Image (cartoon, rainbow, N blue to C red; front, side, top):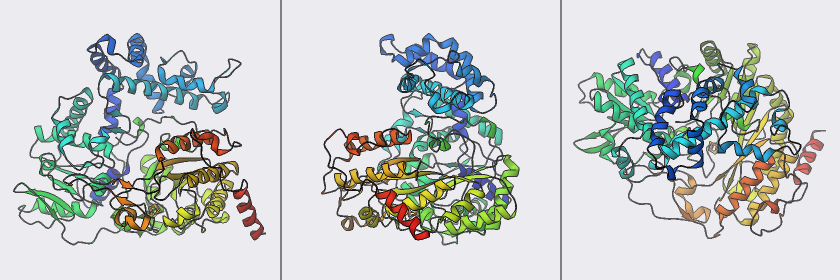
Length: 625
Ligand code: SF4
């Protein structure tokens, strides 16, 4: 339950690694299978049966529309899904005609773009020729309507990219998850369990590893483990992945081990090798690495000291076994950069392990996936790229590093150019000085089409406090260099950082406005700051002027921690204004207006000079000339 357009990389990495060590490993993407099953004619009939059990008075408009046009939905679901999978492009012409797919409440968004002359409301985004993209957007709205029906009539916890997220996110106690697992199954649950059993019968595994990257994949993983243990108690089940690495470090809950025999932290390679040795032996030795087990009803953490497998030796990921032609490229956001996250199939790789900077005070820098930096020579990376290209036949790569190092990117670009290898790629970076205009052009030549990086709170005072190591002027210069090289730029933005005042927020929005005006960035996203227990802010709150609220006793998950900021700013209300402004900026709207107009409450005038960014850019080009 992560994304629909491309496989999550963890299983590809582990499968590649395990095969390189002679282990007979296979992978399955049950999350994709679940969506394809529910959004099929049989799935829609099953949803319809659930709808029919609802009292007529309890049906939301989207459900009523689903029933009225049920035959049409049945007729269109297979071609619409095939279209989004890229397997049936010609149906796009019918979709664009607007009387093929039934249109529910989600299509109301098109009214925002109504052409006053009665013309095409999407012409501004797709022109008169963009049939495929236009149809992709319409088919996405259609699927979103169906997901709303599913939520209304079957299971309110369902979303395409997460399921029952609140049961796992920073849940100190296992009780809510245990109750949900004991409750009667919904159609989503029973479909998930059936798919799991089919996968087990197909592969007959001895060991099943479940990877849970985010809280929104945890409940489903427990459901799947339940399905396995109920029928095949002899199969060993192991839980790992990003959510475990972040949130389960203080695990004390024995009931978790009714579902999983082992829970492993951080990179899986070394713990799995140790686990296999343990299972091959008599089970007595506990030479396990970063692994929780239950012994005599108590949870025990075993961590025999063994070196991690170096990044250069983890092998090449493999997508073998995953149905690459069945992933769905959806188009929700009509912004050229935003769409990259949900549209197109990207081979996900990392340029290095961890973050070379590892200083930002809001980030989990103490955790292995950030704090342990380990690179690999450009030749090895290029070999991996070529192997993946050969296997998948797809030349798009998403480098999913937290922050890919400029030196490594430069070396990789040189290697790709030396091999005359044509690919396209995008990834996360820090907006640091070493991304010169020359390097940006070189990266573009090597296939870079987009980059994303953190500007966080656009305020030099707060950037310093968060140890981001960049200034607003520097971000302007670096992002402009990328944009001028033809590379799209996305900025991660933040609000609600400790000591951030209303004035800081207004000023930050003014900087962001100017960055759009000057063509430095093309998209962005405002995240609300959350304090995590593993970050420098969470570990030393007094340094940041805040007090942490006490946490409940932790037996299960822990991550976010509430805090008191004496500033007392209502960040929720400001956040709405920031989102509204950014959404409009991304569509080129409202860029000339005073940023105060986006706020519903009175806010002070920005202290930022109206041409601050233009001047910062001018100063740097004067220096260059
Ligand atoms: S926020 Fe990004 S750049 Fe900063 S330490 Fe974390 S991963 Fe590194």
